[in-house]
Length: 353
Image (tube, rainbow, N blue to C red):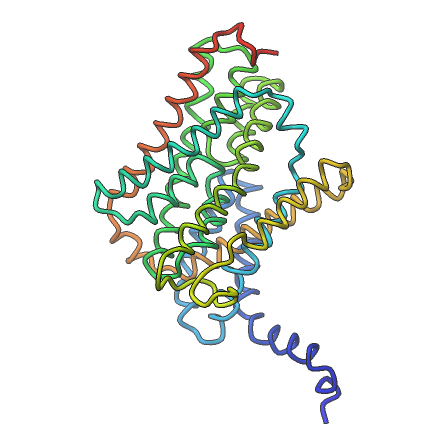
């Protein structure tokens, strides 16, 4: 008799590991390859992982790799989003005052509405409009992946997630190049420039890069504003989960306590908030915070590589130009909103330090 059979839980875990390891191992190798490319040749790590994953789409048709790929796009993804909370404290958020917080909330709410409205006008699905609106207004590819964890499960939505990640990463990179010269052209002081960059650029890495092009002070403000937007990911994903939960006949996570519906507040979001509160109370040492942040990044890159492997490039291209135009409109709207706030506040406004 196999000795592991005496402990069913251990036996089940080992059996699960045996099933998922081929696909998970490939996703891990893609993550390492993308990291090597980003570190030695520059460029966005998440986009490298996505493109490499797309090139390995044929592996998703292999019965040996499919379970591991699915595991990475669900469980590993949620773990990565939850661990983002170790990078944020409530003190960082409160240090900037009420103005940027209110504009960030308004930016998220209006961009979500704009995305849903424009999607209907452009004959796209409302789900795509909400997904792209969340990605543009919160934290780019990470937000897209977090929202995808509570979206209705369908092939069309999976293609929408991939297209959103590609589009939002591309626009974020363009923003990193063009927004700092715009801030200098407008002669914004460091704090105002940081608010503009942190409030409008989609991905965290590009926010850091853009802020560093201006000054260390601008970079510090930019990352705090960006983390404020990341913190708002929790209520947004919870509300979207509630919205999709109310839809009859929606196919979502099989582990949901209500068949066909996601939980009201997903557990990974509760873990995210728990880490934010723990970090705010000083319960996460600096070294541990950096480690958890790096682990979050690894999980998100692995999940994105697996998501690429699930998606056919031919089907992705078939979606056409409309989703790209949708994300461009959302990006320009967010930029206009923050520029309007800075213009109204003025260089001597209460947000200036």
